[in-house]
Image 1: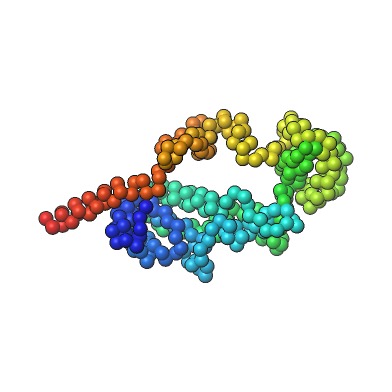
Image 2: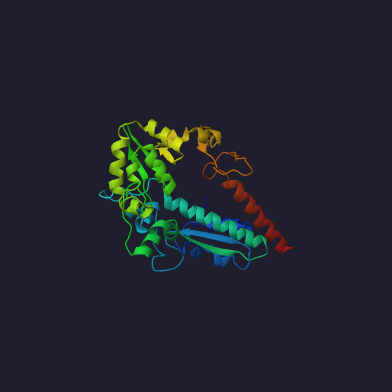
Amino acid sequence: MLDLKSPADLEVARGLILDADIVIENNRPGVMDRLGLGYSSFAEVRPKLLYCSISAYGQSGPRAGEGGFDLTIQASAGVMSVTGEPDGAPVKCGVPVSDFASGLYAAFSIAASLAHVRAGGRGAHIDVPMFGCTLGIAALQTSEYFGNGRSPGKLGSAHPRNAPYEAFQAGDGYFAIAAGNHKLWLDVCRVVDLPQLVGDPRFVSTTERAANQVALKEILETVFVKQPVEHWIAAFNAAGVPHARINDYAAALADPQTEHMNWVQPIELPGGQKTKTFASPIRLNGQGFVVRLPPPALGQHTEEIKRHYAASTTATATEAEE
């Protein structure tokens, strides 16, 4: 934890960057340059340095100077225009998709660039714009716009190109099914015992079903409301149709698959408080990743780092005098 307005702390920051393989910063463009900590200050002395800048709109362009948070990026990149019910007010995605998409794009870019550096290549200044990353994950919507010239709208939980592919109301709640191909559609017809839908011209193809999905939903829900959610979960599971309960987070974290994968692990917070966290979902060769260390308190290692760089600075000055 450094005060970059302090000359002494600024020197510590420079020392950290000169020792680093990777630097990640999340300021508005120009801030690090004004502090003397921008990529151009290190590119020549550390040619293999990977310097990643995550910002709202990127390092150049007419909006580069603007700040942004997940909400404003979801708004500007179109996410809020397709989230929620068709007649509802603008809503953001409940999960901060712009924040996480940008972090994942940054991590992937850094990993790919690190492989390049270790193979003998130069480092780079990696520019990660949250606005662009959020547009990047919207390939379904952008390709729809490029294909027909119409800006996609809100569909609730429905899909613009597939049906039935959304949440449906049962007798005691809601559940979701995703009949993403024609075979699965035929399986749905068998489960609800409506064989006449197979030959209905409104539903004969994926394209037609998507175009008439409001009518299709009304027909299916007249059957679904006659039985509880658990009945339909069991029926679609037996038929092999992708399905899901509408879980809250308590239910998702208690799911048997979550337990099997050992994703929820104990962790100790600064001050000794014990809680739980969701660990890495990734497995390599069948093995997951444990939480190796507790998270540090803010500034926990500051003095140790300052002492290290103060000693390095003193040693360098002594060598220069000798």
